[in-house]
Image 1 (cartoon, protein in one colour):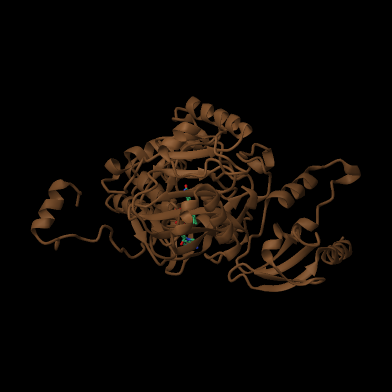
Image 2: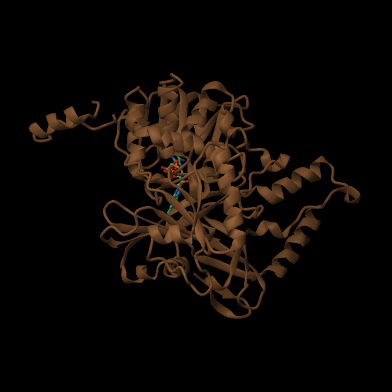
Length: 104
Length: 416
Ligand SMILES: Cc1cc2nc3c(=O)[nH]c(=O)nc-3n(C[C@H](O)[C@H](O)[C@H](O)COP(=O)(O)OP(=O)(O)OC[C@H]3O[C@@H](n4cnc5c(N)ncnc54)[C@H](O)[C@@H]3O)c2cc1C
């Protein structure tokens, strides 16, 4: 697989380490005043352990460990391994946070 | 028909014209006591033990492809019971004992071959860890021997003992481990279940669950709805896709694992060898091909094929362990989709939905588990209570904290 790095251009996927579902970027809040209540515990359990694991389009974290050490969000099809989109993780995170705040 | 010396002689005299298909091809009935989703090794073994041990024969196994099309026909066939943790070792030792009696039990030649599994160690620290693991195995009634370099040399003189970076110091040997003809296992269990009246229905994909008042009372399939009192899902790499239809998210990611086979060679490797300084395992099939593999590719996949970097990585492991392998030509490779769980251990449990049960999360070690997995899942489905040896494989252990993490690598499935 070739990952089209937004800063470096196409790079061999073997230079990266895959860290799984990009939803890991959005860690849930620890609960009111940092004291986790049941809802916060549930949210953290789901965040840490449960996955959508879709057959099809999947947004995932790839770390350019043997490259520039940047974190990318790669949108990839898990059925045929084709790569649809590559973005810097920090941009995706900023966007997600905005949506979360907007929703909250 | 029971297989015996007499049936073989009898057929030989009649030109082998009297052999019959070993299971029926029934049409699905409208309802069963129990439906098993997935006709892989675990689903078929579950049906076998339900009908042969627990006396429940009104059972259907629904398989979306053909028997043996999943991981049961794709694995590298290694069986062993060399686990460390309490939640695991009694279960895997139960499985190994079931393997030992399996062929007599289901009257089918699955070519169970206890040729020995040797895990090599390359440092003092690794030796100590293996000594601890061996002791845990022995405490659970399994066999284990810690052997030094001389004894490894006597078994496998061609290994690279004096490798500059990872010299071989010795190994942990489980003589009762070995290999089994993998698709023979599926066929043997299928035949044994079918002969008790279990309907094995191929080319029947489960596409949804029938729910009434929050209880699961059957499945929607590509061949119409089928009702059941209890539904057990054993869909291996497709577990998340199947359970999504019941609105559940699982602590599982699906990953691809590849296997590789060389051209047929004269006998050179009598047992199974695993490399301790990288992930590489090798054995020789009865046809002479070297069968080997290593790590999963490391990214989510449902493609049933992997990429070249892992091929290179696995071959490097092979070359570091036994340089002679470089002269053999590789002729085949393939991939299978593994249900990698968050702690590397499986799940055999009820779900929060009444009537729906789950058998999943086998990662890349589920072949050796086939007999015990089927037995324990049958026990759960028949009695409603977990089998003692599988009581730790709970779906809610990630919430309670009672995880079974052999590798200690945490909630990152591609590291298990
Ligand atoms: C390359 C490779 C090497 C391996 N090596 C080893 C090894 O050496 N030792 C070891 O112990 N383990 C090994 N494993 C792991 C082992 O093969 C699996 O853990 C085990 O086979 C999984 O259980 P199963 O046999 O029931 O799976 P499968 O045979 O995959 O059965 C699941 C079945 O469910 C069916 N299914 C899925 N969705 C549906 C649906 N919606 N409706 C109906 N049916 C459905 C599938 O078609 C499939 O047939 C290896 C795996 C691979 C891929």
